[in-house]
Length: 263
Ligand SMILES: Nc1ncnc2c1ncn2[C@@H]1O[C@H](COP(=O)(O)OP(=O)(O)OP(=O)(O)O)[C@@H](O)[C@H]1O
Image (cartoon, rainbow, N blue to C red; front, top):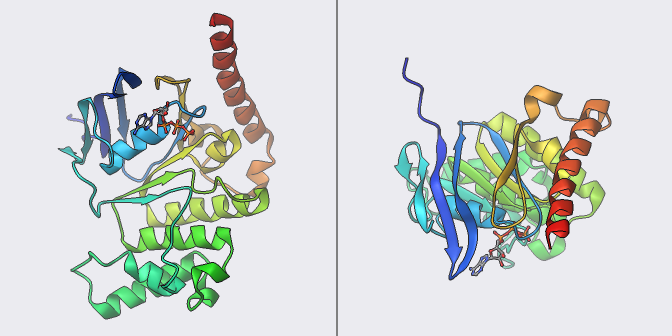
């Protein structure tokens, strides 16, 4: 029987910036619909570049990225992106910031947009802050506005580049928990970039572990089959979580040791 084609696919992708190779070996990856995939690797290994190419913000030097079998092309509303430093519109309230994410949704009436904004405001726990301006809420809340704004636009694919990087540890854990829940409830195919191993294990169904630049996959880890689909504080404290985190840390350190021995 013919296999269904993957939802999102990198096919022999390479990328250079001038003469700097970021993805040198042809990169191939097939991502099924609804999967929470984390790109994990050391700083500068090319994770962001790979994600920007999915979003259409960068183009491959060779090869293709396919979404439902067709090349991704320029940025469009099928792919929603959340970055580490979220720039909200300071003159718009939280509610209006979220509505702004739907400005290209011609299929929705003004009333429907307002209802969707309300729904996603509540989903990320900002119902009480709808009328606040970004300058009056915390960094973590602003990041939740970014997530709600992107979800409300209803992209097919959610692309997140270290969205919690600037947050303190407690808030970061809270938002990881919320994001995993939101992603499972919405079923959005999600690619999340981080260099934090614990964050990767907590969030992911699958982790693609990269070695140092140029980007090369050193492991493709099926996290759900190792620690199960449930993610909460008990799971974070569990032995199986600890083991997986340690194994991936060793893997990353191994690469670093080899690199330093080679230089
Ligand atoms: N527009 C660009 N022009 C030239 N070089 C670039 C450009 N964008 C990225 N690079 C280089 O490509 C390499 C990979 O960068 P990238 O941001 O993809 O890595 P990363 O793994 O996401 O790192 P970090 O975790 O630090 O964000 C780096 O050496 C970076 O300097």
